[in-house]
Picture 1 (cartoon, rainbow, N blue to C red):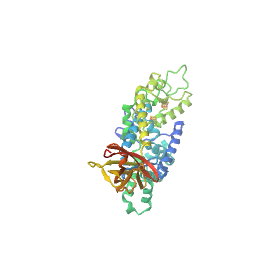
Picture 2 (picture 1 turned 90 degrees about the vertical axis):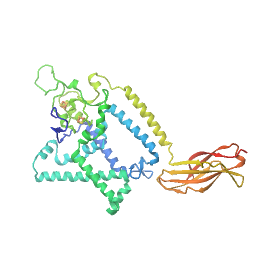
Picture 3 (picture 1 turned 135 degrees about the vertical axis):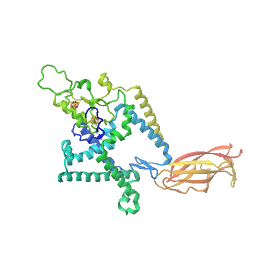
Amino acid sequence: MDDGLVAGWDNGKRKWMYPLIRKGIFYKWRSIISYFYLVVFFAGPFIRIKGQPLLLLNVLERQFVIFGQVFWPQDIFLFMLASLVFLVCVVVFTIAFGRIFCGWICPQTIFMEMVFRKIEIWIEGDAKKRKKLDAGTWTNEKLLKKGSKHLIFIVLSFLIANTFLAYIIGSDSLIKIMVEPIQLHLVGFIAIWVFTAVFYLVYSQVRELVCTLICPYGRLQGVLLDQNTLVVAYNDVRGEPRGKLDRHAQGPSTKGDCVDCGLCIDVCPTGIDIRKGTQLECINCTACIDVCDEVMDKIHKPRNLIGFYSENMIHKQEKPTFNLRMKGYTAVITILTVALGIFIFSRSDMDITIMRSAGMLYQEQPGGYISNIYNMEVINKTNKSQDIVLQPIDPSIKIQYIQAPGRIGSGESAKAVFFIMIPRKQITTTKTDVGLQLIRNHQVVQKVSTSFVGPIN
Ligand code: SF4
Ligand code: SF4
């Protein structure tokens, strides 16, 4: 990149990127992670845990499934807590390791660099050939290469769009859109093609601008990084003053280890020169580390002229420290995660609320019983319809329904009105606690207690 120009832009005009690919150790690890990620991404909507998908984010019907656990709008509190934990984790992770998420885990980078870029290289050749092809006139060869590349891009975008939609509406609904007549699923059909168009435009045209201009996470770096954050950085203390290698020079060299080959810029997918310091456009993809290590090996110098460094590691020779800010964030993460775990594991898949009818005291009933009247609401958070029964824990107490809850559909709630009847001789105080249990399929799913008002014997 020329001095004075913003990465990726040349006097206000976009500079098209032709990053070189070098298969160093980091590239190999990124490839392994990407393949694993791609398998999980495409298989995700079809993997079932106890009959539920691995992940379903059905915002339209407000149903969410995470690792087979079904969440309904009633669980909004859990969602807010989970979002908070996630946000704090992202902040702490960024403070510690900068933007490593972007280069290694972000779907945008994985699809762009590990799928679409590889296809482009396979069809159009290395950076030099791609640049030449773009600059050349339209020949049959260019037409064939560009046409086949864009056709594959569209097919891939279509696959990604379908998978993406399956995470929203579920794989069964997606299959219906595919096999049933279009007029029955017009909205779904249009959605697939809108998503396809968006993905195709992102991966064929917008590309690195998503990371450098659009994504808000990149902008956050400015406030989150500090001098102890580990980022991909150039060790300028060791590298400067840079200069071409002079193999015939006599005596000790006055130059640093950087031979100013410019390869670290050539491999950079966002087109920056890491030697100018940490920049918002750096997605920590580590391509520059791989290529610089290759150069260092060739000139018999130690690796890691570009590596994972903090500002203080380079300029104050400090080791990475677990500073006060990190300790604070870690404490917050631990507390929030434990709270989230407790809420999730103690969460019942049936929600029950029982209230004694307001303004009513007790009633005398035949057979020596005293009764109170109650309203009940039960929410079925499972993915199946449920028949439930409410039973007093004490067998001498009876329940008589005025309105029974009946069968409760998945994600639905039902109301009931009933009497609790206690033998008069058992009542010793004006207020008695009554234990009740909710039974489903002969199993107790929840225990609750309510208060009972009676006469003084
Ligand atoms: S790849 Fe290494 S040696 Fe070459 S210019 Fe970049 S920092 Fe210098
Ligand atoms: S500077 Fe290095 S780590 Fe950062 S985006 Fe460019 S190649 Fe990747």
